[in-house]
Length: 546
Image (cartoon, rainbow, N blue to C red; front, side, top):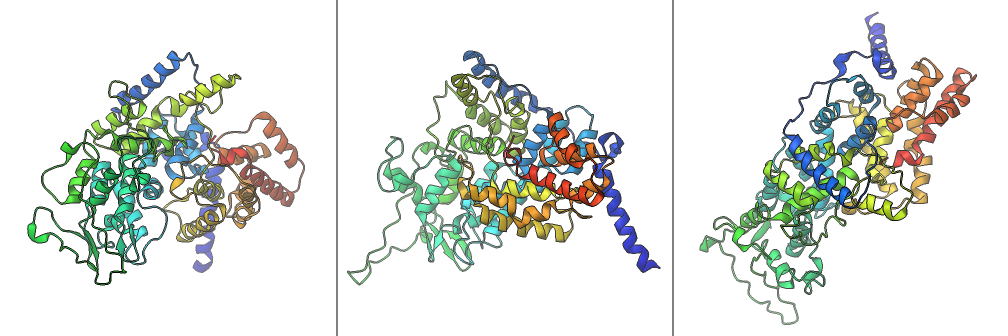
């Protein structure tokens, strides 16, 4: 008897959870709403952004777009912070949350979720170490991303993270931050030039790659000698069996031996590693420490505006789908100090709050521009261009591949797919994501570049195994639960729209699908609901941040 009852209880428990999730919000228990304290220090930071942009709007006599619905903002938050639409479970909790400042509290709730740490770690890792696997054994990208995610969970200050990456020593498995260094190892040799170029792009937001061979054609402040000097910052690094090691400059006994020329004249002699030099701010270099420790201190120095501007621009891009200055890793020199732009405003606030990434994200998420509609009433093309340029409307951008597949997988489950999900569910998500992204086209470390949709991508969304499994109507999928547990046809349509778009359907949209559902049998209704979800998955709205 017990053997029979146990499976029945499990099924009943699953059924109860499913039924609760598809019920309207007024029937949910208020205990579902999590109480998260709002950071009251945000007001000044948010006001600084709002005042800067509103001054621009007034100067150019622009009227910003209307304020977006809170559910639309919730979808933006989930997509930008976790790479997926909110689950129906979360949508119902958000509906039931009637306390003040719910968007601020939900932003913090997402920032404290492991999904944020895992997702943002991958986004940042792409700029730090790229997407390739690198030298076998010596470079462990998975360990680096896991380390980065843990730093985000602990809310480690950003400047501290960067200093550890640049100056770390030890074995790449035991000291995972050192994988920033070993990512530049190829054929057993450390590529100092690659580390120099990557450091400038990721930490300063500037591309100096061309200065490796000649002076920068568009920036007189970046000469070929500057590139060589940055490469020299990594000239004392050794990657050996015991890990990454650097010989201290202050210890004469630790200086590397001078290499003798190769005996064979036909063989090319090793090029000497240039002396470590910085292109500006020489007085920011400390007197003590190894070469890389000094370089890390220089990068993160409080007066180095490029450092704070680079990360605020990248985070802005991850939040909006488009960076404030594009391209994100080839920004011009900072403007004059008496003519600061928005990145200076954000950067100064970021520095004053201890390089706190969560504070930066909360500030952007609470700003007026992040909560504007994606549409604007103007029909004048020049005015619309000015509106978009001054961020008086939320930019429309295509979702990245991982956001597309993350949203499809989440929309196929009523409950939140996260670290607490069943092991089988998490494994299925991992394998499906990897396969889908590989076929859809990974954007690599250029994921913030403007992208266009392709016919093969559209066909993949329509006909892939992932889509077919996601819309399949059974006891475990969203399609089956919605078809069999909603009280009426109107609830079916409303719930499907909430799952896919985080909004209710418009009257014409609702009427269209109600006509499809009217008078059909139970089995036929399941098929219609499958078609409903297929149509929503393949609509432009699903694959855009709108």
